[in-house]
Image (tube, rainbow over all chains, first blue to last red; front, top):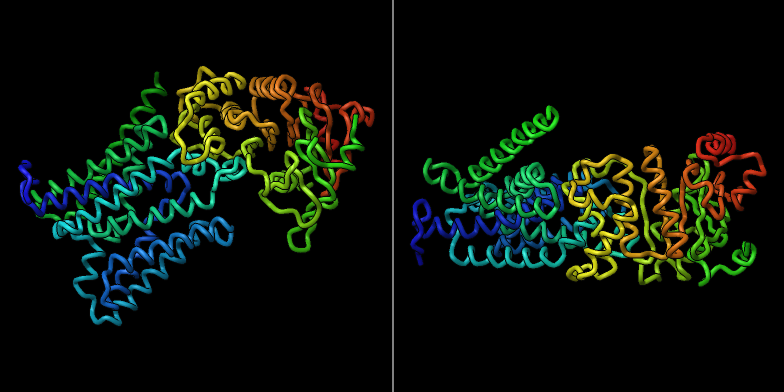
Length: 277
Length: 260
């Protein structure tokens, strides 16, 4: 089914890419806003590398790599949070351990499966232009679930991100909320894998948030701007990629980087204007 | 002053009661046989030199760290048994944690309502009003929509006090709330705390080096030294020992360092 959309989204494969991309472009920055606030900006990256090991395991075992990736990513993300909450390791050290274990595990598993095959590369760099209608539906469903969970819990997640200790004293289920956020991160990473690839997943969780923080004056506005920049980067990135015959995953992330750079310049200008006023 | 009664029967009558509480990291004893109480509506200060165990005492009292031995009663319950945790307000020590936070003063204060209503519920219609009242108490009502990063350190501290007040707690625990805070904010801080304590019967445990701003309002001062309670009595008794808590005096910090 092809919808009557204007160029560059006039083809079915571009429309499937647009649907999956917009779903990921909305969810990733939404989760990322809380991660950045908790100083866990690299969580998406660490979880992405664990998911990659899951993909390799799935390809080796001959089962759907999406499910093995989801299982490994959720387990890994929950363990990182558990280690951090129990103060067994600092957040960045726990992440680093899983980051390297994930990537090393993936290398060994793909080695076992033979040479680095094309299936693995699809997940490393993303292949949004080859998303099937079933894939797109799956990604959109995951995104809808993530949006629903965030809509219900964002105030509590904000209270925890703001001050974990005070939230605990007030009686919020800090451990459950933190583990929940870790699980949502893993789900988002797996959903985004096909769109921008494991290597660039975290970029969509962090760059739009960085841009939004410079534009917004409230947390609510930060969430809205982050989603707007995330979705905008996907739409513009896909269009530029098609026009220039570029790799879409990388182009999307470069557009997000550009948005971040623009807001940084805008912010410096605003500060100067305020200082001289 | 029913001090001795409180000691012998810690329980429902007190906002906070510790009985023979000890805590150690490995072999290092941080708290040794600490007994203290904060009665309902009482304004108590906890002072002590650096490393005397004040912060650990607060963490144990709030149930963030379990005591090695002894009994803790928070609003009459063991800390991990207390269901309505929002009845305890807590203002943690700050360390520039909000330098990047994209949030307005109002959002930060309103986040104090989340636990009371249940984390997954939508805000209740009276929360807007309660947020406004809490901001009134700390004299920041006019900064409601301003990003918290644009406030001074003292003003930020008052925002966190408002966040603790917004759930209308029965016990307020403040960890070094006036450290490095300007005089105007200290005066506002004093007004806010004394109002809650005297008018609404909120019990207050204030952990601080600098008691000058509230010296005249305290019911009792507790001094912790080497993990033990070295003094527990009204400010007048401390004054009788030649230690002044007066506004512009530095006697207390000097005296405290002498204890170390």
